[in-house]
Image (tube, rainbow, N blue to C red; front, side):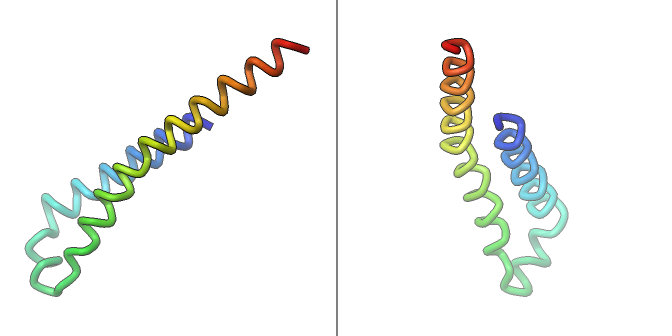
Length: 67
């Protein structure tokens, strides 16, 4: 599950970076700058998700080792 969380963080970071570097002026001019904030929020929300997935995988490994 960890790769999915990491991939989500990376995707939000890359899309946010592309929007910020190349489309920021257009987004602001057309009142769509909330997309930059959505990417930022997705990037930040990915870290608690990553922590949950790390814990989930550790618990799954521990349960499998106990069998």
